[in-house]
Length: 232
Image 1 (cartoon, rainbow, N blue to C red):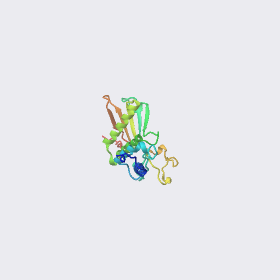
Image 2: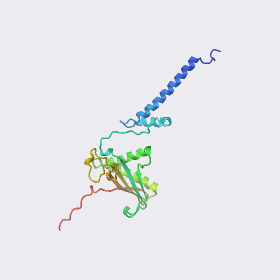
Image 3: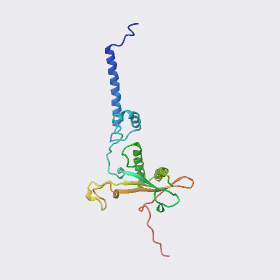
Image 4: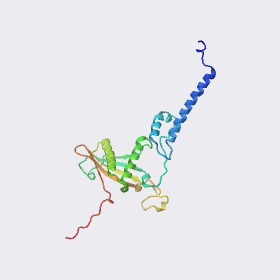
């Protein structure tokens, strides 16, 4: 009876201590491995990785082990790989055309404040999807209209406006050989507005029933030229 209540020996205590240290080290290395693997530049995160990274975030971000999902993807030089964003011009009246009004605000998604964060990544992905499905080769008017409606509605709520013009802008990349640049494209300023191309534009407004409507604007390339009237 007395032997069963005896304190553990020093060998047992040291063995238990080593086990606890090994367990803590294994958990630590597992957390670090998960967040680093989730930021590998060769593939995107899976749903499981997203859940694990969010679960371990209080620990890994405290020790700066989580790079906050800033991978550098290899680019194939396609237009879809170029930087893309949404610009929302907001107007006070839904009844008047925009050329008869002064914008009350202009929003850019993602905004230029800060380079990281979930909201920024979501806005970048949304702009890329809009640009992709606005391409005439894979055009999906249902999807582009819904994205434009959501972006315009968000801007109108934020600025208390009744009309918006949503534009999807893509910044073209400079060619490898700068000597091939067309006139008007400065070789020393890759972020010059000359490189910005509007790939989608739509009017968004709130009708008399409070419903948000959207109508895509046709570009010059999409508008058929006027045909001369035939002589009578």
